[in-house]
Amino acid sequence: MTRNQQAEVSEFLMTPEMSVIGKGKTFAIRTYGCQANVRDSETLSGLLKSMSFTEAEEEKDADVILFNTCAIRKNAEEHVLGEVGNLKPLKKKDPEKIFVLCGCMAQEEGIVDTLLKKYPQVDIIFGTHNLDRFPELLADFMHRRQRIVDVESIEGRITEGLPVSRTHRHKAYVNIMYGCDKFCTYCIVPYTRGKERSRKMEHILEEIREFKASGGKEVTLLGQNVNAYGKDLQMQDGFTQLLEQCALTGIDRIRFYTSHPRDYTSSTIDVMAKYDNIMNSLHLPVQSGSDEILKKMNRGYTSSRYFDLYDEIKAKIPQMTFTTDIIVGFPQETEEQFEDTLKLADYCKFDAAFTFIYSPREGTPAAAMLDNIPAEVKKERLERLNERIGMYARQKNEEYVGKTVEVLCDGISKKNDHVYAGYSADNKLVNFTANQVYAGDLVKVKITEARSYSLNGEMEEN
Ligand code: 5AD
Ligand code: SF4
Image 1 (cartoon, rainbow, N blue to C red):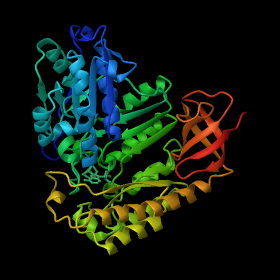
Image 2 (image 1 turned 90 degrees about the vertical axis):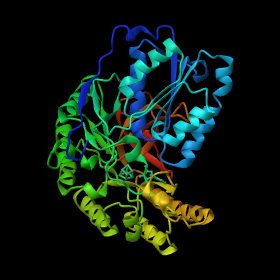
Image 3 (image 1 turned 120 degrees about the vertical axis):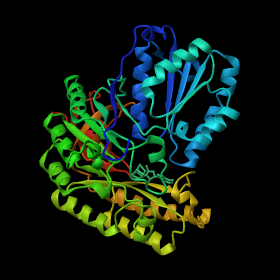
Image 4 (image 1 turned 135 degrees about the horizontal axis):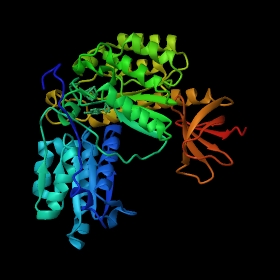
């Protein structure tokens, strides 16, 4: 697929023979990494259930164990390889068990070689482009018990109609596009997830309408760079059009993830301001506050473009909350360049930020750059940045004390049985007490206490 060429779209079909092969068998899926992987795991779970597998109560008892992996940083990969190593005794005890490794790590040649040489306990390896083929691969393995590696390096196609078993009934991830064409010099995603390709608007809207009809309240539109939606479909300002159409479905809450400052348009901001069901929280990765580093990263914008965009959004939607991603210790980053990032954090006062130490990824342009920053310096920069980010996050949260916010309840808090948890419209995690409330209820909560990355409150009973 060259640029501006549309991706091939096909419709998934489950054959009757395939739909029974999991009868009496169980599965477990472990998901690493970003929302794209979480959504892919929901499809994998949907596929397995359509094949009559049921979900195991405990991973160790499952007949089929899948690891859906992430390749974004080296430590994520090392962790997964360690966990795959831990499967060895399980396989020894029960050789009938089937281990599957899929996701972004499977798209890396070096990793596949390592798995083949050193991890014989992995039975099936398949990549990010062929989820639709998973039932066939599994059936084939069950039949022949011969190791399978099925990784496509094609630039990507789109399969519609794949079954999905969603984690929640009230909120859903909806893919709007796959892949990424931005080629930021540090990032492995364009290599593991292929070219940018957008789903047709009618398919996306149909998914949202169906979800709403089944009682769904919130959708998060997913893409590596949602602002580029529709470019491959020759749409003009496609994301703005899509966002407006999504708003018109009348679903209670719409979020989207992730944005790119380069492709963000004023018309998108106008649509966000116009519709109440587009939530006022924005994840807008900046990566660095230094123009020289942004250039080396191939981000395609300067810090002043980022400030202008931030200012424009704030001016049109004053209550907007902002989160971001930042990398420290990019090759040859100087102290001054790092301080530019601190200055940017001072200006934007993010509600939260995901901060990372640069991790060289084989095959990316940055991996070939001289990485001369000592590990202690990178660590120290990360700590200084986190301190600054944490200070603003807390200050921002303190402004909520005494105010009432609308929360979409996710259920009982993970940490405390008497407390419920959910997210406010502007994406703050809120833990709250209430007499009785159910997952999927939209409730009013009075905030009583601010913590660094969450709020505590009491539900206002009416
Ligand atoms: N090293 C460190 N962080 C990275 N990210 C992407 N690639 C790397 C890398 N090689 C971060 C970016 C991106 C987020 C998802 O992960 O900040 O926005
Ligand atoms: Fe990676 Fe950049 Fe694409 Fe984000 S926009 S997925 S950081 S290449």
